[in-house]
Image 1 (cartoon, each protein chain N blue to C red):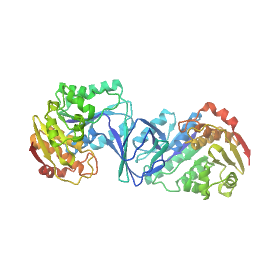
Image 2: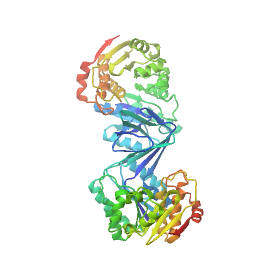
Image 3: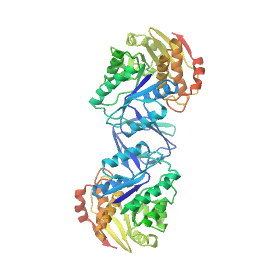
Length: 309
Length: 309
């Protein structure tokens, strides 16, 4: 069983309007509301891959109830912990070829809730074969919260796939118990290294540097150009097929879902890389975020090229 | 007991941002979410006046649950009917001295739900001493739905205070069973008469015209200038005290709450006019929509001037 963790989920609202005007009333008829958050995208794709999956994290209020109902509908095991605060909305207004977003910061987690979730997390980690942890931390949780979670997972022997960025990524790498797999994209890795841009050679050098020494798998995604993958002490360039990208949002989450599922199925080496990255490609081919057409998996894996660099 | 009806309620979200930019991510920390809809404002003010009140209409989904919880917290009897569709959000972004609004159209009511609510409404009308009906109709309800409700209320002998505009206002006036009280504001009355603006004399003539012949009370609110009130065949000019208006939103709903409460307390004539309009003034003095400082009622009523015109 794979457990996915989303500590600051959201109900994502999408408004499509022909014309959006400031300082007036905009009436919208095209509205969609979905359970959002990176870890929930991961869970959705794992579920589509027909692998048993549970979702956990922190949920509160009526928007928390909305997400619980959505998990039930999708047949994803619900292991979220209830909090007193209210789960947030994140809004995307799509208008005139533009995307204007409003992101609420979300609830402030109380200290007893923060401690309570670490207990819950220990129990989940004991049941899980693999754990994915995605996204940022809600307010109220200490900056080293992911490090505490990584230490607990290590203690109970469950490997973690971590997808985060910035300071949280840096702290995870400095941890004594680093994750089993990390998936920074090219920009996130550049940001970590304090560089503007990175070429393939820079990425190869970075993932093989002492910084990532304790991390079994490092997957640096390059968008439509594929990925650079480090496994143990070797680095690989993976090239994905040219596709018509419709919506790349959620492709990183789909890659995490692919690797978690592949690892749960004991895939390794080239096959794991191809399987994992295929889910990112397939997600980009669909309108819906965190959704793949599973009938295209075999085709996509056949198109993938892996070479050691 | 007063029953307030809101057929298309909403969870109102207010974002205050220093700077709002299109085509980018706007992070907001100042978020408030409240039970919205004109009839819910009416119910809130009646509750503050310590008069027994029930709220009814149509609620669905997790945002419907949010409103139910809010009613419980406010100690307002909840007689809403559950629908399959989801109750809507209405969003106000307050930025750079501007207010940008996004109004969702809300759920589409199914035919069986429309018919079901008329049965519910008959039961409520039988229990109620007074009924208020506020706002617009959600999609799926026929244009003559308020007329059907007015006919039912007449049958069971319960007077209705109706606050709507445009075509729904026109249809209610053409109804064989018009409401007991109507409260168009100056602009809504001008719109009904197909005029650009109206002076006091125009308003006096209009409310005493055959158009409003069957309506016991007509209250035409003029914002900070007070109101023109018609009672039976006489017209009155009511002047309210000069105040520092902080937020006039919901003042019309507060006037409905004032008149409903006054009528339930068997006030009449000048006293009813003063009491009813006082609630609009007091609401405008507060930041919060549909909220009054009850300690100021006596002061405000003393400042009100009524003269026959």
